[in-house]
Amino acid sequence: MSYQRRSFMRAIGALGAGLGGAAVLPRMAWAEKAVEYPTSPVNVIIPFTAGGSTDYMGRLITTDIGSRFGGKFIPENKPGASGSIGTAGVLRAQADGHTLLYTTAAFITNLLLYKNLPYDPIADFAPIARTVGLPLVLTVGKETGVTSLPGLIDYLKRNQQSASYGSYGIGTSSHVSASIFLKKIGLPSIVHVPYKDNRITSDLVEGRLTFMMEAWSVAAPMVQAGRAVALGVTSDQPLPFSPQLPTIQSVIRDKYNLVSWHAVLAKKKTPDDILDLLNREINVSLAKERIQKSVNDMGFLKFAPMSRPAMTPFLTDELARWKLLMAEAGVPMV
Image (tube, rainbow, N blue to C red; front, side):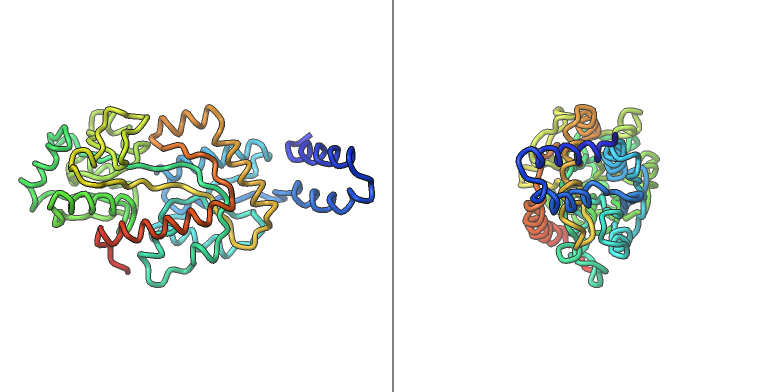
């Protein structure tokens, strides 16, 4: 008997025990609708390239949920324009829960970046669940010879004309966090090199970039192979996965805290019972010891479970927070 069918039968049994048959029938129709989901494969759109931190976590959670629903949850990468291409594509699907979005804070910051964004993150989408927090790690290539954050600051001051940093595009968290860092140390003119793919990591280890802000899940293999050095973290507190790394805030002695996040959303008007089911299933996956370990090992931060009603004010607050951060970083609208 399937997971969904067992849940349905338990619900009907509980109702039948305390109610007359006539009272149960209308609720059976509602419950049957809920347990029929999904009736076809659920495409989970990850609007970024394969191999990145969002792809890793999105696939981990999607696969785990799929294991309870006959493997019907299928992750699909649709990168481009800081995630806005794949995000807009979700709106072309039916509002029936069979096309979902697994994304990052770029979901809302794109509203502050693109003048003609083809979606409204608040009006067009129904938030389902927040999954993990994402601090970044300031990483330099081994070729620089830099082994500490104060050493990097000194290196940048001595090499202002030739130094550079990479990001995953204008307005991304990797760009905003680096830009604010450079402004706070008085070096805003260091060259920014935006990338559309994961070549950024090879350019770092081969010496074509001086530093980058990267998720630990991507930086770790370079660091562990001895080809890059992690110098500090963008959160204002030391991180569980690497407590020896200093916070950037503690070194520059100025307020600095840039942590992104991941979330799952659906098209607006998706039925509430499906959204509620997905919220529960995502939180079931996140509570598993195996996934908690991966969250920690790959450098993500654990969030307490968030209800669906709490998601909308969370997104509204994040939009206001990132508006201030992007203004501080000097990110122009395009």
